[in-house]
Every structure is written in structure tokens, then in C-alpha cells.
Image (cartoon, rainbow, N blue to C red; front, side, top):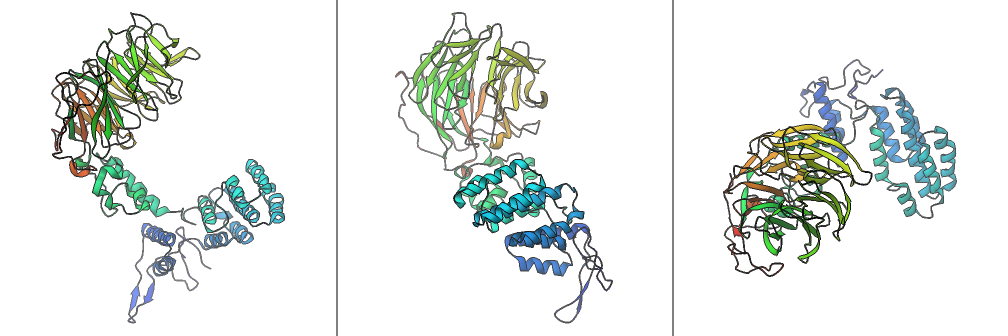
Length: 606
């Protein structure tokens, strides 16, 4: 009697010879006896994986030939019969074949779930086929007696009253009777079967995807961009399926490796529109605008060109009484909070589409409002400062709530929409709930937290800590994940950021006039950018165009960083500069600054 090995191959034939890749002899075309090589367990599994992939691609004859020549079997015979019955919609035979597989299941309890899935498909196909009485019998006599997933049974019973197939498919969240839905069913059923009996669906593709992903995580410069940002290199991906596996370019025939030139290490543009030190910069959430704030009391709003990775001045927000130390875009990109130096007693909210002031917040001449953060609805925000003011406000400048005695260094709002995070003078970040007046400690550092920011998920916080550098914290576990090395951080307020594809990178300015970029899993920088001649106060990464970074410095300039010209959507070497003068919000020109940027082909990047 034949006995199956774990890999699905026949171990002993009736004549006593082995059949599972054990070096069988075969007659060649020229009459010479050929010996099938004996395969190891790993080799047999590889043959099965290749065979499965050939079948999934539609090359069943090639798969059959491979199995015959290797002496292996793709699936256990009982599993093969089960698959055949399911795909043919022969539900009674499928249940019988499932009974044969009972003793081979790792978890006997999964048998009921598998039977339920079979009967669910049978019931839905009967309904769509107009066989209401047969469907009712299946529901009452087969599905309900299982006493399994009764919530779903009740949902299925309500489908009896559906008037047409489209309504039925929509309500059942089902693709309809046919090959596709049965294939989906088979994929779900395969998860309950041991891989020695039936391979998990798409196993070879899964392994390749895991290998590619592992190589990506090991790549220091992997920063997947849109087609417009990688230009001609997108020719390497010719199909949607290839793109899912490889991203924007690449090949399975080579190990994954992104060129450094495709990473934003090159100066694309140098902007000198501000008249003094530039302290803060922020890209808008939609990535189409950049705001920069300066000691000269102005904020410049720039329009982003995603093709060339350059910006052009839209207008200047003027009329502030002191230098601009902080900027906060509303989630809908239509508004911008401008926070001023500690000596100012107000902050200003601007309409960034029209360049008009929306409101001011000023409760007392003794106030200091040096930081702010928006709620998700873009209609409320929180603000605070080092003199103990901590307010929640609306767009009319009204203070809705206040929290007394908190000296706030920096603010953010967590993804839950209600927890306000504030760093204070006690080297900590605490969570505050204005609605129920509760607060709790989240992070405790040993030195002053000069600034912090959250990633898009709200799980991680990036802190610039005085004399320590940049620290990454997990807010859920309240644990320090990593300390990034290389930069010079004293007691200046330097603002770092998350950025790149999937926010895999960290970028920060430094007191040594450089920009440092790290992969979030590495302590040492993957890139150090030079070109500024003063302290780099802030770095901001475009959230929509991951090949675009901006930095601002005490040298009075804004630098735009991007890939080398050949990796951008358009060539930017030696462009023509214009002498047009963009308007300011109140008609005033900034003295001593150019009204256009200097475009560089290679910059001073290291």
C-alpha cells in the first residue's frame, strides 16, 4: 500500500521501489537509462513551490511534467480531490473529501470552520441561482445545526429576501458564483491545512515578497517615490503586479540596492528671500506648499512644483511684531498658525489661500504663546508658552479652555484627537485632556526637551534633547527606542522630523551647520548634508513627495534638497532664472533679499 511522506511524495510503491524523489530510473529518448537525482527535503519543497506557482500562472501541464519528472506530488491526493470538488462546486463530494482530511488537520476544531465555509458558499450560490427552496434547506438542515458563527448565520438568513443578484453580492460581501469566488474560498480553506498536505496559497510569491522586503529594510537609501519623481527609471516596472513586488523599479535577478544619487542629498534650490535668520519651516499636509518663518518677522508661503522639486514664492505674511519661532499648518492645509518670540503676547492665524489674517489670540500682555497644534477638524487648536499659558482656542481667537501653571516648550495632539502632548520645563512630556481636566506623565528625560514631533501614526515621538541629540520614543510602550548619533545639539531649539516613504527616515538640523539624516533603524546617519553656513534650525520633509526636503538656517537661507538631476522628474541643471517680483500680503518688499531662488545642479551636498 502507498504511504505519503510529509512533502506529499509517494514513499513506497507497490513494487517496493521509492517514488518520492529518491533517484528513480527512467528511460531517455535515446534508450539510455537516466537516473532522476535524489532530492533533499528542501529541494523537494522547492519543487513543490515552483509547481504551485506554475499552476497559479496557468501552466498546469508544465507543473504536471515537473511533478512527474521529480517524483514529487504537489498536494496530498485527498487534498487534491478536495480542491477539485470545491472548484467544480460539487459540495457533497467536497464534504466527503474533507472527511478524509480530518485526521491530517493540525487543529481538529478547524474542521467545523472549514465545513461552515463550504456550506456558506453552497448556500450563496443556490440563492444567486434562484434555487430559494434548496438554499433554505441548506440553511436550516446544514448550516444552522453546526452551531458555528451564528452571527453570520443570521446575516445569511436575511439574504433570502434580496431581490436581485447584485444586491445579494453586496450584502453578503461576496464576489458571486463562479471561479473567482471558489478560488477565494479555496485560499481561505488552505490556511487550515498543514503545508505538508496542501501548500499555503501563493507560497512562492509570499517568500519572494518577504525577501524583497527584508532587502528594502537593509537598504540605507530606500525611499520609494512616485513615477514623476524617479523619471526614466520607472521603465523597470512594466506591470502593476511587478510594481507591487519591486516598487518603483528593480529586478528579482539582482539584490535590492537604491543608489545614493536617488536620495535627497543634492541641493536643488537656495532661497534668500528672508532678511535675517530663518528659524522654522513646515511643508503643508498636502505637500503643495512650504511655509518658512524668520527672525525678520515674516512668513513666506511657497508653492511646490513636484516635477522639479522646487518652490516659488506665493506671498509673504507680514505685520508680526517679533520673529517667527513656530509654524503649524491646519490638517486641511487652508490655515497656518504663526507663533512669535517669547516677548510677543500673541499668535496669529492666517488664511494661506488668500494671505489674510483670520484671528489673533492674545489674552494678556504677559502672555507668551510660542508653540501650537491643531485638532483634526482644523477649527480648534491648542497653544502655549514658557510663561505658563496653555490654551485651547477657536478660529475667532476665543479661549475655550485653559490649563494653569504649565510652562510649555512644544505641543502636539495624538491621533485619538483628544490627548494634547506638551513638553515642559521638567524634562518631560505629559498628556492633557481638556474635556475632563486630566493629565498624566508619558516621557521623562534627564535634560530639557527643546522640541518634539509625532509620526503619522501617533505611536512614535522624535525629541531634540538639550546636549543629548535626537531621541526616538515609543509612546505606546513609553520606552526609548533609539538615540541617533552624529549631530551637535546644545541648548538651541532645533526641530527634527520624520520623513521619506513610510516615514522610514529621521532628519534634523545641527549646531555644526549640517543636516543629518538617519534611517529610523540605524543610530548613525546615512547622509550628512552640507551647504549652510550657520546653525541649521529646522528640517522638514515633504509628506507627499518623499524626495523633497527643506532646511533653514541662521545663515538666512532656505535650502531645498532632492535627488541628483537624473533622478528627478525634470532636469534642473542651468535653468533660466526670472526677475519677477512676487507680491507680499501687504505689498511690502523684503529689503536685501532676492525675490527668486538660485537653482543649482549639484549643490554642496556630501
